Image 1 (cartoon, one colour):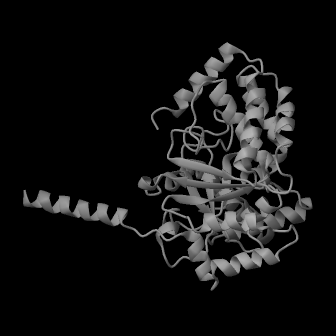
Image 2 (tube, rainbow, N blue to C red):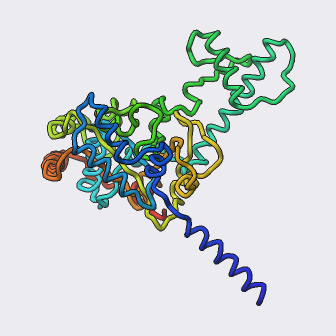
Length: 386
């Protein structure tokens, strides 16, 4: 009995420690680490006036920065048309598939997309681990060719990657292919986790943990918002990405362009979209620890710490990138712990007019009832038992 009580007390202590970690807002930590204040950062932004930053912009950034709470995951900036893409998906799911979706959730990709079935970050990164081994094997073969003897020393992935890239550039003049002796082609551009490639962009969302954090003159998230710009190639292919979504409901995809045109006339051309992603504060970052990972730019895993480490470690004032795995069952699931909020320069009245016109148009489109019902069942099944 005494031993049982001891075990229970230890378990209680562990639980208290796990839930009493102090959350210090990441942007506040970043600013402090730069030996600046929020006011000085905002002043610097005003001086970066190529796009005439106005009070409304500064107010938005200030409100976000001073209201970071437990559960914050990070920020993403995008072109304003990404918001149209998200609104088309959400409106169709609500009005055509008759599935209610909460206000503080947005679809970052199309739910049910067969490309998006990774169950966790570890599941996604298995592909990366396989790739690592391929690169090391290739590097050893290259060394053997050059030295005419076998490489005895072990190679790190970073060293192996340099060898392969250098050989690739020499042999194929900047084409990212390496022809191995067994006639298998190692395609660095496709196999390598690089979120500048289209295939990887469909599966990952890059996030900044701190709003102002970046190594450039102006933070990338804020740059995307101020200049209505997206770094992702997917932004230029949103209409094509929506075609299979419309087909799932039996809607002719000729209507997609009309929907974009109706929506675009309401959107400001000189400002983009700012997305803030959080998880419910009682989840203690379990979601992002499972479905995200810390990375170098472009997606290579960085270190071995779980994302939650960066939210509770006071000494960290500079942050690496964070990647969110986009998956049908989890990050594209409105029943998940994710909170996805969007900010743009429209007033609430302007947004109401915009969304009403877009919604009325989409509700009036002819669709196949049987296909829509089948798609509805598919999504409900995917989103169940999370």
